[in-house]
Structures are given as structure tokens and as C-alpha cells.
Length: 190
Length: 161
Image (tube, rainbow over all chains, first blue to last red; front, side, top):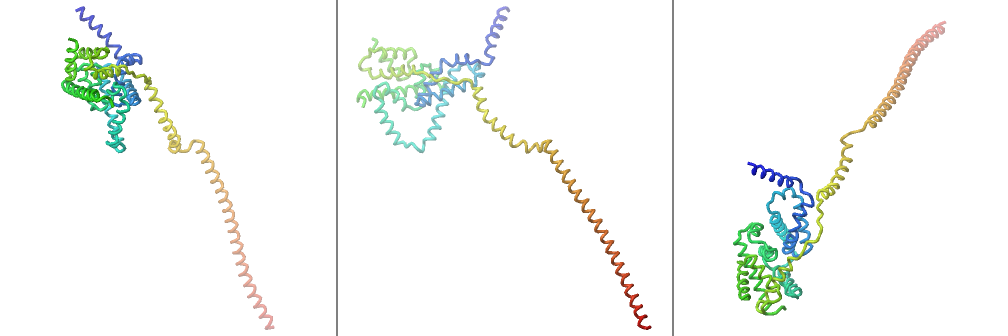
């Protein structure tokens, strides 16, 4: 009997602070550990640093607005990464819709290959260009696995996919990167 | 051998079958600077991955969203007040002062009109006295007619004499 009573008392003590409205410092404590991850995912998808910064700011403000709900989420980080992914993909969609008339496909192809030649001065930079050419889904998965080092279960939750599908996509992406790497290795960087 | 192990890991890596620990092992190997020549071309990839992880978000985020919201609404409030200023007087109608002024103006015109009507009535009375005069005159003329007949008969009498 006495143990049960103590347990109940302790759960009440734990639960009460979360019911209050979250203070700014609490919020920062929650968000700080993964804000860079949000930013890096945004940058992987949006490429430009400024756009990634804007996106990150927007995500963090959204979280701040919903701070009352945050305490209910079990995994704020995974939730935020999902939000970031959706937000950036929406951005890209609307950007594509806007640019459709201006950008001709031939023109962009030439441009990117020219850019590739100019920017691939060092081979590390070259990897980022290879990754830019990957499909969005694969980009996200490589970002989450190879850079952020999440385990498959977490990635599955963030992307709402099963683990096998993630492994298949990841394998494809890694092989594409390897192919392009070995090509440049054999022919030398132009 | 270590190299053999690494080669196996790379193969597993490309099939997405490596665990996080094994991937960490690969990263450590390729960042060690002691990479076998035939694996050299993988090095920039792992370098890039570990470099990318150091990138940080440095901008400050204005978290006082409540206040920001307030500022956003200030312009709306200003417009609303302006509209009220334009619309409400029309709805509310004249003020007490304006009502009194209007009443005074009304009273004054009524007074002026009544003065005029008094004048008109006086004029009318004078006109009726004029009518009386003209009646008298007509009577006088008739009398004068009788007088002239009277003189005619007297003249006849005088002729007969």
C-alpha cells in the first residue's frame, strides 16, 4: 500500500510542471539539441543557406506557437524533423510552380554541369553536388542516416515509411554516390 | 585483417545493411588519414558527411511571438478606429448642441414667418377699409346721378316758365 501511495505522489509531482505554460528557457532547452539538425535538413533540400535559415526560423516559431502541445508529444525532435521535411518540400513545390515558365530544362542542365565543373575544385564539395542530384526522398534519407546518424526506427517514424523501404532507398542513394565517385576517380576531376 | 573487414563493411554499407556502430567504424577509418589507395575515392564522402554535421544554425529566433502578433494587429486596429471615426457620426445623428441650434433656427424662422403674416393681415385689413371707401364712393356716385336727374327736372321746369 505504502509503495503505491509514494508512486502516485511522485507521478503527480512530475506531471504538474509540464501542465503549466512552457517558459522560453524550457523551450530553448528542448529545441537547442536539434535546431542544427533542422537547419541542415532544410539546407539539404533548399540548398541555399538563406532559405534554409528562413525555413528553420519558421519551424522554430511554429514549435513556439504550439508549445502548449509540445509537452504532449513523446518525441519533439522526430516531430520537428517531419515538420521540416514537409515544410521544405512544400517550399520546393511552390518554387517549382513559380519558376516553371522561366526555367527551361535544357538551360538548367547546362548550367548545373557548368556549375559542377567550377565548384568541384575539391572533391569534398563534389559530394554535395552529387547529393543535389539525388531524388528528394533519397536526399532526406542520406541526410538523416549518414550525416545525422539516426537509427532506422527513428527515420521510419519521421518519414512515415517502413524500415525496408528506407533501406532500399538508402542503398540506391549510396550506390549512386559510389558510381559517380568512382567515375570521377577513374577519369580524374575535370 | 582490418582492410578486409573495411571492404566487407563498405559492401554492407552500400546495401544499407550496416548498423550505426559499423558506420561509425567506417567513418573513423576514412578520417584516420591512413586509407588504402584503392579505397581512397570513398574518403571525400565520409569527410563530407562529418563536415556537414558540424554546420550550425546561428541566427537568433525572435520567440516573443505574442508581442509580434500584437504589433501585426496594431495596423488593423488603426484602420478600424479610422473607419469608426468616419462611420459612427453618420449613425449617431446630430449631437445635443446641433439639435439645439436647429431648434433655435426653426424658432427664429417661425417667428419671422409669423411677423410677416401679421404684416400681411394688417395689409388685408387696410385693403378691406379701401373696399369700404370704394363702396361709399359708388353710393356717392349714385347719389350724384340722382342729383343730376334732379337738376334736369329743375331745368325743364325753368324752361317751361
